[in-house]
Length: 250
Image (cartoon, rainbow, N blue to C red; front, side):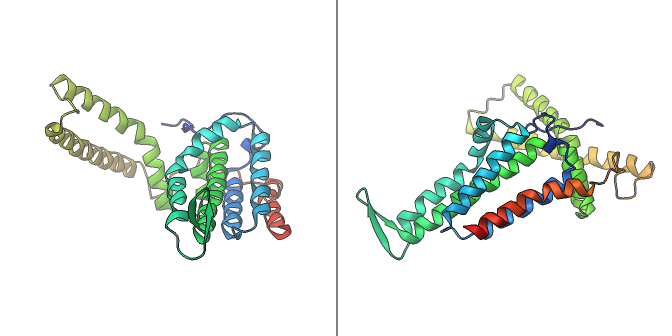
């Protein structure tokens, strides 16, 4: 339970970005994303500059480009939605390869794809250079309401336990002839899901009572109280400041 809880997106590379305090990285990525979102879609040069910044950061953090591209496919549903906008948009239209496309739809599709891709890449870089435990510590230092960080902490700590419980219940169903290919056997799955919920709820109550009996008062003790020095804040500020400069020049 006291492990670092390195999530599947974390890459242990030991780069300078990895060694930065988590709160400075969270703030830097947040400000960068805000600048990207506020940039008008017509400023193509600005988006090219933002992408160059992300590429440089990935190189400094030693995060492989192929690794980023594979995990960036999480935005494919939004890309597919954006592709439909030029066909169903209103207003002025242009002909391209025998197709009538809406100008407003083209701008909207580009806006979604460009800004969504940059946001996803920046978030992946944050996840690749920061463990989940450090992310929670960073949010706590940024004065995020404790109820959110506590819920995330408990979810992180017991996610593997719940997954193992679900796996054992599935094996038990299969040993009793359960076959998920048949629709009429969905009742067994629903019953198992309800049982897993009740079991998890009861475990949570027992854990909470045990914590209260040991002095828990609504806030988990921090094992690392190191505050980010001014130098790390200055280094992290490079990303949003450069993005603001790119937006201004574009």
